Length: 351
View (spheres, helix red, strand yellow):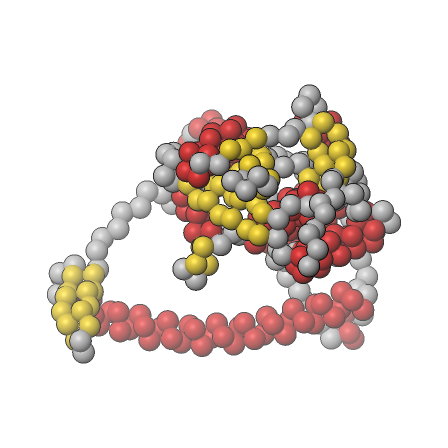
């Protein structure tokens, strides 16, 4: 097989002296690595519609910054994490402060964190990540090392744009150099081909045509996206008429609701029986907080320990409001949520 001749990516712009707003404007000219997961419907952070709104710079009703502290911390810690990577691997890293563009697909952009000089003289990519201790488990699957799929797509996008065959990830999840995760991926051209196809489809079928993509993601992501797009509820907006599509979705929802109610009835029956058995066991403890022993070759421990919880009852909250309204107003926050429901009536009753 003849040796692959690397296609040099184009340079869209030097990022050395760009302001944040200028950098964001250039990012809107195409699809970046962190955008790909949303296009593929696997992002835990945003929907394809969110990405569409961002690329077209569509103003949102609620333009919140989300967890801006985590984002800022990640940015500030990048040089430190890169330094840890070099210390752990012995590999030299360097930056090229440019935004690159795929030579064949100009809508594919790459702003790479770091580059890695390999012992064989080739160059690899390095993506820096930070997370918290509880989220580090996302870097394992079934006991095997992995890269979270929403970060994997980012790396594979960068390899495609830069025409490079390897990428490293270095993720810091603690406050010392041993609390770091390092992963290494090789290029997968079959995966890449499908990914590029879906990116091109999104860019041409939605961004260039200004046709928003449908919501297909997890319900909580969709509702959060709608909250940002539509803002607070406005009860003055007239009711809309059911169409075939909405009616079909509604009927599917009602069928699932009925199935859920049946399962919940069964679960309630089981819970009632479990509570009865629990009462019998607590009675046999006879005031003790614990029972231990072996049965059938297995060691069991039954515990019934006291648990303290700090809180305020609804009655006391009402008293606080009446007797100390200044304190109540200072510390109590009122939040708005929206309750979803479907009511059905026979057509002749509704007339």
